[in-house]
Image (cartoon, rainbow over all chains, first blue to last red):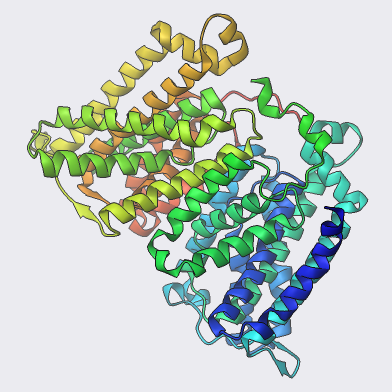
Length: 317
Length: 293
């Protein structure tokens, strides 16, 4: 078991790096790229849900803000990809910050409702602010991502790029989760009152997590826009937020790799079951309900055992 | 005189919202849980009622349709409770929220598969024509809706505040542990709560059906959102609040549609929800709860 743990990660990385070389089918490569992009976005939500226990039911809004920012800057303003990419991260992070400051006073379900409403309003803006977003027509002709003169114009290049970003993100998150800041996040998750009595400024930590998470979701959005070459409001529907939540929970919200696994599973499996296209969303629903039933902690648990023994908050009632 | 007509239209729409919100807030009150699939129970019931009642036995009196809808919704609601919420009593509060979302996806997509993505049109005969007095015209349907919502809310109130069962429900909501020491079986009460709460949504299904005569799979999600907004506006877990919130939302929507812009009608609910959450999270009638942090 230990040997497995030790070699699992390098093995997975090697497999992923070999993937576009072995699998030359463009369709499968495409699924690979989408998996990486959604793994990034799901990881951003995992930071929020798993570490600080802030359940955002409107995370597709930040994904969408990133996508639109990057798309509009490159098509309408003619900026290079890297500028759009950077601004997308900063702007969605900023919106996340501005939204979180008043809203994080809310707790639990109330917070989820507020984020859900925010997600719906954000989509309404994308649909109705025609002067900026082209309304229902969406933004066509988004250029390929490029690193200065090097165009990421093939699925293989895009795969390596998104995979590198995902790896970088996971490395950063793993550092964060073990840092004092990360430990404080987990303390807030387990018991916000205890954290406050220890002198932790709970609101500030929550705002930090939310801003960071929104920024990373925006990063994913930018990648998505430049890979798809076309976006419209329809992609950033509230349903998409639920899908992201599903990825996080199914994979295991407390684990670093949980959201990644969830994103890969929920992106790839429905695509591979193409024949069941009509049942796709139904499968999502069934998976959500049943995985929780079989493994409430998600497939990868990642929550220290001694914390599970503590009576849960619901237990008192 | 137009104003008076719009008030009645708004109150009729609001009565429907109030019924859905009442069920939602009741379930929240007892389980402290957001029933994310509540709107979808509403929608799915609509489909079942339409296929059973309208197409199989056309011409049933509206009162019977209403009762059938309440019974169907009640059963469906209890089934949803068993599958999506029962297993997670002791879990973290996130888990039932997410399994509720899963249930919502299941119901929506089952409806999509069974009845197709398009809108189904039908009509219930409520048996009352248009009424006019003093120069104003009111469609009979709206009067029926208004009257039915009032009667149902009154019966519900009587049940919750005047009967032994109602008292058991309130006791469970206040403190399940102590309630069970008094011989109340919380699990049974929770099941009953879902039955009654969903029956209210079922009544709303029949009334909305009589009003619009159309159903489609996404209807549940939007109705559910409006019920969330209405109950948050009134104060979650507060029965009077849900009714007041529902009526207010209905009136606001009708007035927005006629005086500002029809396009904004659906944005109102979301706007209200965000505003209330920011300014007064406990709602108009909600008591301030002690704040831990």
